Length: 493
Ligand code: LFR
Image (cartoon, rainbow, N blue to C red):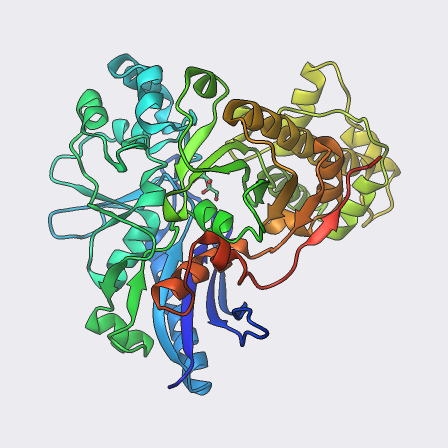
């Protein structure tokens, strides 16, 4: 029989990729490990339309189609057979469909501030304590519940989360994947069902489709999609942990359950894997979330600002003609002494895009600290070299993230009673040696860094099991993660 290939569509806030995955040959009683080939990359980002931030969902659809075409060609060439497609993206955002199933305008992006005026109204209709007791979600101003409450008119409309929307365009099936549903605050964490109580309280119709669990299939390809991409019409679109963080956590290469993780990308998602949600008032006050993971696990975590802070600084510097290679920025930051200023990377003041270096400086100064000044630094620096302000800013971000990870983990451990012995860092930040070492130092835990593409791997692992290529639970899936992690010991250990 020809070899089986799977296709992962993995889209983050700043870029997307389409990957062909296969299971390599096993050996000595071990199952094979994942092998991945990136066949298509594309940029993503928010676009401002009439003063509001949106995602260009139609362009994402085109990029997915192009990626599927490229994947079909690669697989045809190698004489393999595509068994399935899995899609993951960020969470909380949705597209609205009209009665004809057509998208009603581009979906809103969560970094938009449009929910601000409705948050109090929602909390007056259903108390934050009650919302937490049902959904167990950390308060973030962009949770779907506030976004829906900010919609002017939902009559006659249906909503699909972004990965579900992309799956709908491939299959025609309308479903809501569970891990993503768990980020809406309209979902009952214990019942694993939509919460009629929350929809009724906020006076919004139940616009979402029925739930589907990771591993179940939305359906097979629409004939026109098969024709356009060159894939067979019997290729299944399988639900994976469609919330990117759920897929990333599924691919943490942990050997047992006593681990903590940071899924480090645009956001840093910092926490633990639990069997049951922690819905206590203490947990709500500490703002921990109980998002659903693959196989009914609970992702007990907190959003820490993440590499977004760095991405936004480098974007601003590029606009100012001060673009510097990331490796140079990190090397200059690493050369600075420990003990510099830190900001609260969790703070909502850093959610919106724009002017990040100035906002970081303001946050440091309002705490009575200082960052090297821009003007003086620029005047003294060699053209093309990292200047003192950039070095200090990048160091401040790295120290702040490491401190934020340590504080979040301490609290997660206190609130859940679980004592992790190692910390896995997966995603883009796992390649950042400075961040990994500072995190080991700040947490006192050995850090195991990698894989970088954990999200795509988690996506593929769930597909592999759905296709019968892997069996067992998360431990067995994790044993098939492609590469071994890199270890960082905490200073002084
Ligand atoms: C990470 C992520 C986080 C979620 C944020 C917004 O990409 O999915 O888990 O809180 O984006 O959806």
